[in-house]
Image 1 (cartoon, rainbow, N blue to C red):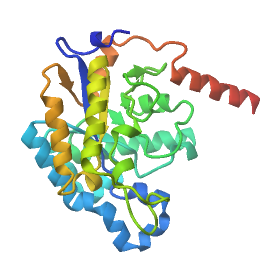
Image 2: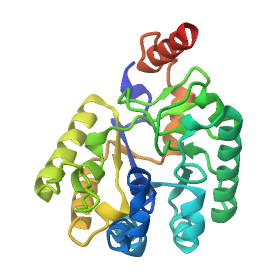
Image 3: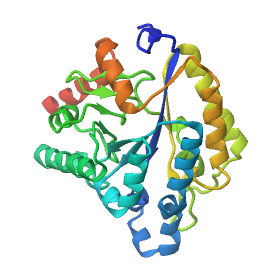
Length: 295
């Protein structure tokens, strides 16, 4: 497919700024004993304390709309922040009721969870919730159909492409990639160890160079660049300038379409082609179907 046919006229590539706001739930899932370590847990709680507001100020100054992924639990814990994010014109998307493993739920349980989380976020923020991000675990068989049944239209959970695509069910997928994410660079805690081998937190200029190099390549090939930023890692006093410098570089090109997840999904639904038979999602589904038959 010619990528340029997917984007609005005059636009060469798309950019989505994705904001996972887990408020430490991701760390607790990996190290449950953090619940009893207030000092260590505060590393992740910094996002709600300072990072969200600092990032929102930066986005406002640059006139950038972003897409925030919250669980219903996080939104209820930080109601004022969730409403402020939505009130500033940013999109709210869901990552479930809590930090759930959907591959550990029955389809009926997953469907109820998805319905309830979407309804809770919509009631709290006053907007339609159409996007979803898998918080942890594996993508269950048929999960795209459950998302559609519960009212979602798109997901930003899988990695197997650099352009949006539609699952066979019609759910739009906006692929994400770990190299376009702050957590692999900046997540750090001594005890319990994050990362387990320790030694991370690279120089900021190197990270900015990587993200800009990726963007320049995505723009060259007309792709969909999704940068994932978390308030606890990118909302610090020093790293906020990294975010601002990246966005200024992106905004310096008038042929770049900076869009929300829903805007990208609607474009894919209207103009995107059907996925090829050898697309990773079809290969994955064929493999899983074979597993079920063999099992």
